[in-house]
Image (tube, rainbow over all chains, first blue to last red; front, side):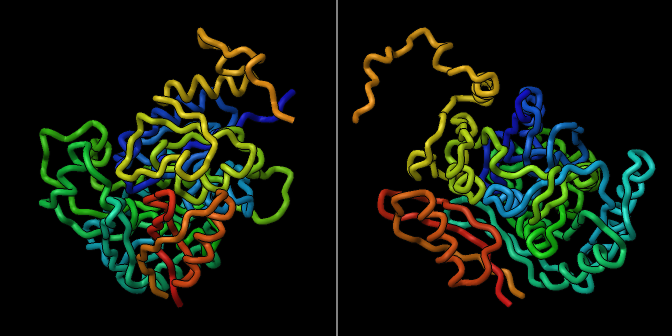
Length: 351
Length: 55
């Protein structure tokens, strides 16, 4: 018997990843990797497709801040059958749009049987501000983070929520070039960086699973909509995938627990080759985890593994990465599958 | 609490461990790091974009 083969899959959010930079369009990659792993640890940007989602039984849905803490060995992941989800609605959301989101929550309870607590509206509008940095990555800030944290505190400590879904009102800008590019499968998700900031705040403060869905006005029909962006235009909200993901998201623990998964159990991490400068990747690169860097998933930034001194296996595509994972899991040297094998006679270790 | 976006540059470090520690230390001069990423790297410097919080 061997221990469960565990793979991490990261597609950083808000950097224009060619695969996974749009509407949950790395989900097929996650589904494929989950077939060759016992456990897949990944994050909302990979699994969230707005109205679309997929239940991957051996996948663990871990928000980015939690993922960073997990990779650093500070937190363990406790798989969970069911979480009670508390819903936070930004006071800045108009009544009709708020009602749309509450109807999604009702649908998730009635149609999927999910457990939700009472919901709460923040005591101030959160006032999200979006920013695109010099690198091309998107970021964001919120004017009233304390209001967000007060709402989460009430849901966790008074309503018994195990996980938090946040819906913040994001600025509508239907004519912007950034949005047009995004809808056409180009450029960077201009909302993504701010979304991450919101969920990071809650996970850092309360150590509970959290994910975010932006509230936006419906967009006019676009006949040239990219397939990679289409999942976000099927309905009025981006909330269904968040509720499904959180319903089985692992709990986060700082303490030893026989059921918890820790960073030293991660056998491999799959990342875009140009985006190796995140905290989780830096942490796992200092362990025995095999870093597999995918060239085809290009991004707006250029921080390759070799420039940082990270030892990695560079592959062209996710298909090739899956081949490497299969070999790794089976204990097969992937080089043995190539036509040319270098003789050991040329590999004398100096004394 | 406020959330602030910042960009910093630090000297390249010889090991990933030292680099990771240096980033954390430099960011803490501006607040509590919430989210960050290296967005540019040369043989001499590493640029980091981040959001930090301040009370």
